[in-house]
Image (cartoon, rainbow, N blue to C red; front, side, top):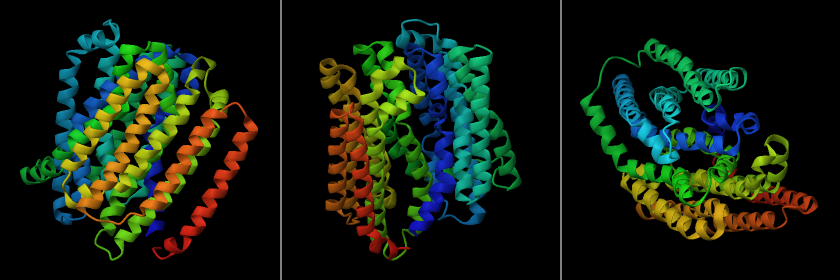
Length: 468
């Protein structure tokens, strides 16, 4: 069963993560083309559009994923069509309405309306990107890895080629970056719709019964998703009150580099949901989920530690020197985003029991912790307070999610093993920040991490084999 999860992550998750982390691949070019101020503009506009995109999806795709294996095959086309048309209509309406206020939004954020055109371009990318995201979930549920890889690869290739052509060859600057994203989604979405039609999965229908069931599952968790968005992105607006656009741009690049773990989060999310619900009714599933948590915690903490140790070298080879102030920020952000992967495992209680209101309570609580810490730390410590507050907020989210799941659907997660691994990981982060200039010490620490990982994996091996 664990092998199935591993294969699923490789086949579906990594492709999905890469397609949603394109800016990570464009960083080496963009940081040499755009100064930190321009990168801050890209990031702030993206922050607004991600919020609108969440409202356009309303978590309908998670509802489809939740019920897909419960409804009959005859019902699936009706449910899929309902989700498709609902997301399409809502996303288009939200993009159009928000675009009417683009000049006002630009003035609020940047003290000028000069970025209203770029914001409008970004807004009308939302319906296309939401349809793309929804279709990938359907293909994933149908277990068609070749089609999945083909469509996500098309999106990746077209986005990179068009973006680089518009930014470098045509000199469109920041505007070209957003045009590239739009056209990168447009081509694969066209073929995805044809695919769904040929598979008879898409028709002109909206089922009231399906929509009602989806709303009951999805709407209660929407505030939590918005809280998660705010936890990761809303700090930009707090930063605007205390920091310059240059500093925001430096942070934006730092979190994009750490976004390799965002890629991992997306990869795991695409695989974990189907794996969870397919194994839920099987005997021994609680022990299986506990083993998954220990293995993933060991792997995530090890990778975070090694990445943090060599952040300086990452910047040296791929990032312009004007962004070097982001080196310590990136080290902390690796861990902050790494926790998001682990949160998905411990936050299974609400999904299993369909009490998704807990997702909202936990997400909003984590957001409040983040905001309070930001307001306390940023005025006193400056830019370094931003990743530190996010790290602590995500750690809070992890602990509270664990507690909630054990209360509403007891799993019996191995708390001591996981707590020990996390404590060692955070201690290594502290050593990384202290000895950042000494390459020999960092190399020795990296060797020690690899040894600890192998020892930890070996100690878990017998438990793993019992579940294969």
